[in-house]
Image (cartoon, rainbow, N blue to C red):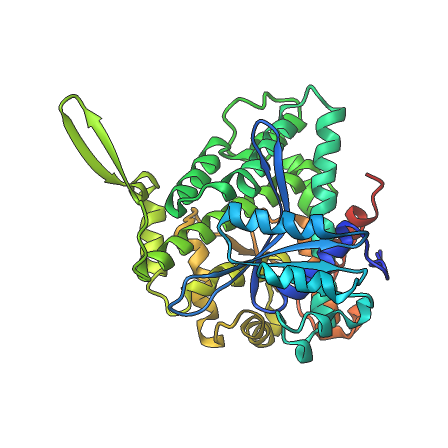
Length: 436
């Protein structure tokens, strides 16, 4: 079994991920590294944390992290970003403490400063935002590994785009990721944001199939609906780190962004807030008004209408962030009761409603034969075409929570269940330790 180790003293991006992990484990939906790039790069946001509550619009908090030097310029820059983004609450998280005068200045303009000189005591310093008495170190470590895997995947994408300039795959994937992670965030109208996200989704149909076909020498721009068998086998049976790993990650990120934006829209509407959700179109002397939601596919609208009647639908963004990027998009059937119990603890959705939360994905993104599958010899129910390093995140999480760190202590049925978990773990480690 391959292994990788987190740094003891996180700096730079690793410090940002370290703080984000604490927020992620305490009920926030986390968006990270958001770039506003217009004619020039306007800003880059470290973390936007959204907290969802019943019958309320989400609370948004902007976190900026500084592991090195910082000063008044960082305080006023953060205040300017809050005004620009129309976000009420902001926090500057630093490693190097300064005199209380800095905190007084920040407080005078409604900003908070959190100093974390000792990373081992981070939970205590963050207790205004998290429940410091109930910090789970396995969760913290797993989210940090998940963020690390994402960072390396995106770095791998950028490097391939530079070194393989004749390949269209990497340009398309980078563009797709930029749209769903950055460009859409700065679209102020909520329903317009959902529409733009779905439009980006439609711009890159079957992107993994296109990537896979270009890998075997076919034209990227041709119509492709399936990944070539060899590439599929290399990726999922041999667990090799192929370009499909990047494309499937971006596809799942896109669907999660669409889900969140659509649910946000429903929350704002149910709260009675004014939303410009209609568009006026003129045809000669006639003018008609259509709902922006009508631009989205009927299947998506119908699914959204159904899930918006679910009692805990407002927590689905948080649930799916956990299920994808910590649980690895799978349920270990031998531990199904424990799986549902843990998912309930982490996301706030009662155990009896976990199936409803899982089925929500099928409703708003309907797919022939469904999204989940089980193999003949592994007792695992998992999402189709899920990026293998994040299957590895989920595998390692089960090793820690059920096996106390030992694969042999897992009680598993199925001829290849344990082997599959270890293979997924190993491809994760390959990505984390790869010289990119």
